[in-house]
Image (cartoon, rainbow, N blue to C red):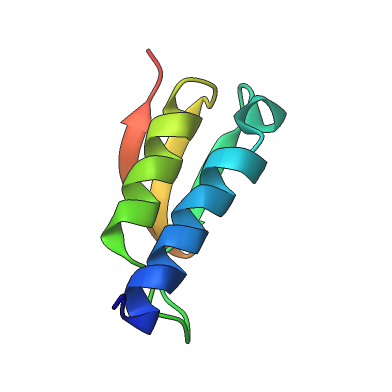
Amino acid sequence: PAKASDIKKSLLLENIRTNLLAETYENRRVVLKGCGDENIPNEAYLLASALLQKQVKSLMYGEPCSTVPVYKRK
């Protein structure tokens, strides 16, 4: 039987795949929020990064006051 955490992760990844409209962020600077009350699986950050990287001007991780660059278009 699947664990609740595995089901939650599966649903989150599917939601990102189907609902993240990366083209909405074309040529924009995007920050993937890194802290919060919810534990977000690393796979969710990897998937979102992969989808966004094709569109964004820059991609950062963390809080707006202290971001870490992940990707920057040349």
